[in-house]
Amino acid sequence: MDTTQWFVSSAGLALIVGIATFFFTSSKGAAMSATTSHGIQEQRIVVKGGYSPSKIIVHTGEPVRLVFERHETSPCSEELLIPAFGIKRDLPPHAKTTVEFTPTKPGTYEFTCGMNMLRGSITVEDQKK
Image (cartoon, rainbow, N blue to C red; front, side):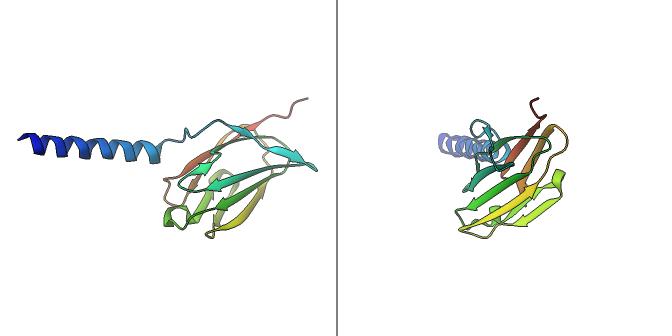
């Protein structure tokens, strides 16, 4: 293998690792606590190459409203799945889509795109007494 082949092979491997790291890790930023207004926990999530914020914190027993704002046309982000809460929604491009549910038990629950490449999580904590 000559120098050019070695360089191209190394660059290709680095690119594969970079892409896999980007798509298969969900550590994009700090967790955001949903704001509560009129008894509903609400969080706006921008969908553009990922979810921002990708980590949401909510509390048990209070309704949750997540407003997904899709700012792109990538086929990967056109579907939203939150399996733990039975949610499957289409996200139209350049539009807002609201999903609502009421968590009843603590835990961390994943949300993804239909291709399972974009990922986020909802951490449900017990109500503070």
